[in-house]
Amino acid sequence: MKKLTKATEKYFKTPFGRIAEKTEALVEATQAQREGCLLISVGDSCAEVFLTNGVKPDILVYDEFCQRQPITSEVRRAIATLDTPITCVKNPPGHITDELEEEIENAIKKKKGKIFIEGEEDLAVLPAAIFAPLGSLIAYGQPNEGMVLVEVTPELKKKAKEIYSKLSSKK
Image 1 (cartoon, rainbow, N blue to C red):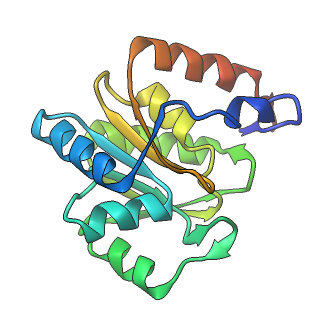
Image 2 (cartoon, rainbow, N blue to C red; image 1 turned 135 degrees about the horizontal axis):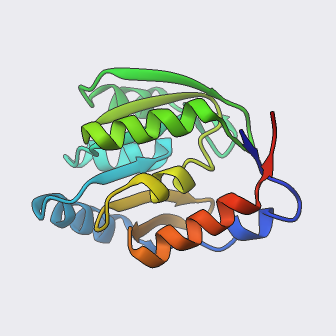
């Protein structure tokens, strides 16, 4: 298990990719999927944007909270439209549990998955970046700014592994 520390918080203040407005995110996600790339959505708001606009992420990681507030019934209904078996994992805030890592890796291997987090999904972008194939598109929310779109490249994988290695190990 890995844990975010005061010293490692700085790595999550700056987006891993670029912030896109809704229309741009939908176009880019649709194009990525047409090209056979994996679309990984981390967070309830991103999931709602995609699913209410006909874009179905291959992998969805969510926790039924948005900026520490319970999601609305509309968001819950949108997420329910993704007809993929749900896996539930426990992941405390500021952590990446072994269980979360394993489920993300399994979903990526299967090229589909819906992972419900009991706790918080905010750091799930790291294992997603580490395990996703090159060319995959990861979308996640940047609070009060919008949706971050990041293509999985060798540079992103290297950065994700470096940050991951700096998180505190916790048994």
